[in-house]
Length: 253
Image 1 (cartoon, rainbow, N blue to C red):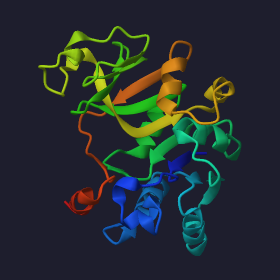
Image 2 (image 1 turned 180 degrees about the horizontal axis):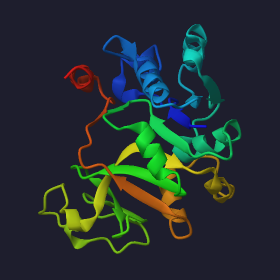
Image 3 (image 1 turned 45 degrees about the vertical axis):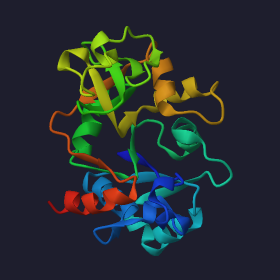
């Protein structure tokens, strides 16, 4: 069974004033809520079970799903109304809602892309976790070895690093472009990844709230956590008011 989790619990502060009265997941792009667009993409790719985490205006999301009969899918709610748990904590809280024998595709509700989700899910099946990455300009990169095994993270603006990697000097050169050369294997995370339930026991000692990237950086020394590079990736983070018009063009090029 193909299963997925949609991160929809965020406050959406960058989309204010829209999110003063609704959750980010229900902000419309091209006449449809972001949540609808992600659910339909997952359904078209063959996903049958979807877990949606909720916090900000949680009832609006649950009512929307009920009004649409869960779009004919097995959609389950992971309720974070009391406390936002961040990405790692959110996955751990939702763990009992998944089939423990199948990987889980994690997708941010505000990400639009040209990714073939079924293909990515299939290619990620044998790993403990697989992160969809691309070579694009950003200030924060994940660092991989030549086998695409995750080794670390770097903020090239501040020089901060995490993980056990020896960060390529090209990523820390303040005079270089934000886009690293291909040889550096510093790649930008897309917000789409696949995690195996095999990793859930490693989360047990983590605090209630933690980020999934911090978890991956800790676990990559003992687990098979790899990047999957999509060279033709088109991706848009619909995180700000001024990206909504861009999003309209993205879905109707």
